[in-house]
Structures are given as C-alpha cells and as structure tokens.
Image 1 (tube, rainbow, N blue to C red):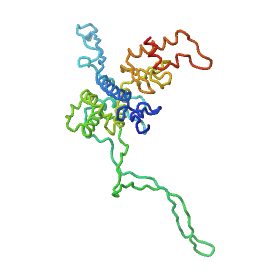
Image 2 (image 1 turned 45 degrees about the horizontal axis):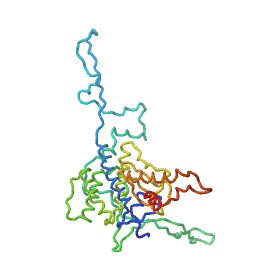
Image 3 (image 1 turned 60 degrees about the vertical axis):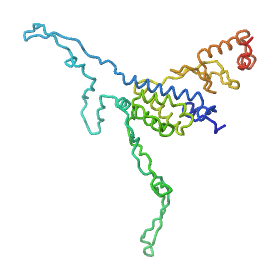
Image 4 (image 1 turned 30 degrees about the vertical axis):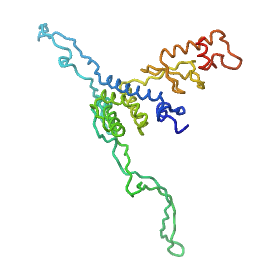
Length: 340
C-alpha cells in the first residue's frame, strides 16, 4: 500500500496517513487542493496588487492678509493635496543617536514589493558554496619540558573539530545553497519557474504563456492533472505554491482561513468510520472527507444528511456504552432505506 500512497498528502495532510490513490501519484482530494491553491494564489495576488485609496486631506482654509483680514483666497491644508497627498513617513526619533542604534525601517513593506515584482527567468535562489562536513579527531601534542633528570618529552592529547569538503564521485566539490539570501521571490517568478519545469518535462511542444500571474496560473490549471499523474517533482511544486499562499496572506496582514468542520456527520464511504471528518474548505465548491478523500457536492451532502437524520429521529436513544443506532448505518443500508 505504501507504494500506492498519494505523494501530496505529506503537503496537505501532514498529521495523517497518506491516502491510496486511484490515479497515478495523487488522490482526487489532493488534486482538488492543488487546483484551489493555484486559484487562491492568483486571487490573493490581485488583492495585494489592488491599490487602496490614498487618504488625502482636502480641507481648505481662507488666507488672511497682514492685518488679519480675509483675502477670499483659499488654500489646501495639506500643500501636497493637489498632487495626491503625501505618503505616510516615519517621524524622526527625539532620542539621541548613539553607537548600536537600529537603523530606521523603510517607509514601505519590502515583502509586498518583492511579491508583486515581475517574473525574472533563470533567477538564482541562493548563492552556491562548496558543501562541508564537520569531523572530530584526536591530536597528540609533544613538547619538551625541564625535568628533575634533565629535559623530557611530555605528550598531551585533546579533541579537535575540523571541516572537510564533501566531494562527489569525480572528486569535485558538491555545491549547496549558502542560505544567506533575504527577501521574497516574486509570485510571477516562482510560477514561471514551475511552468518552465512542467513544459520541459511533460509538454516540450507547448508554448510558454505570457509571464504574468493570471496567465501563468491559468496555464498551470489546464495542465495540473497531467502533472499530478507524471511529474516527478509535483510535491516540491505544491510546497512552493503553498509557501506563496502563506506569504501573500502575511503581506495582506491576514491569517490563513481554517476549514469548516461538519461536526457529527459521518462519511458515506463504507469502512470510513471517522466521526466529524467532513470539512468545507474556503473557496471550494466541494465538501471533502479528510480521511478517505471523498468529495460531496452541496446537493449530495444535503441528501446524505437527510438520510442520517431519518435514521436518528425514530429512536434518538443511545445504547448503553455505545453510539446511537444511526451512527453505525452504512451507505448500503441508507441506500436501501431511500429506495423504500
């Protein structure tokens, strides 16, 4: 069963066992989740790119002459109101500047600027440096010291640590990321890199889209099913898209929405006995069983809950030490009840 486990469950369901898939590599629930997060990244990008209206002080005052008499000339209270107003600027601190003082922060959110930047093909994620490993050893040190019978040699051993280059089979240094890069890669850059990887691996004859976020997201949505079937790095790409989603929510100053749990509703799949595993995720048209991945439309969910309610209404009692009778009903029994 392990070799037929969904590879995306490790991304979307980290605290649960991977589900078996019916199609290659990825089960239906995780396929839907990948598509929904691509759409969510596109929509969050549009929200972040939409400029909020600038608050401009449009109050006016009447100018007075030297004698304090009104002149009939009116001016804006904010001199820059005629050109759109002044952006918020951090004021200068009244404290004296001393050694070790923190530098003033920029008057802009640099993460927002990074995420909204245009796509930069062939962007290097990080500086590459030779890989090293730390090894331990024992060093023996000999020295000559004066003794009662003249000079004598004394040995002392102590442990040392040293670094050694990691070499490949051709005795060449293996290069790894230095981890010293800061800031965010833009949304368009990450999506463009994923698009190019999918094109080179699975669709060599296809034309690349215009490197804008809507165009790249649409290209990925049209080919996500084939990528889930055949792309060897689909897990890494799902992680990158999820990280983009998190970064966009953070840049908007919002928390990631949590799924709505449909409490007390059992899954209709025979053998799926987990209570309260049906969830409705934001911006998803389906209700999903988080245990087996079964998807319910709104109509299917309403029909299923009516069947469960019909089972519980006649008795409504709990057996001693167990669940009520309706909680053990199977999908087959419910289907027979509906056909009566």
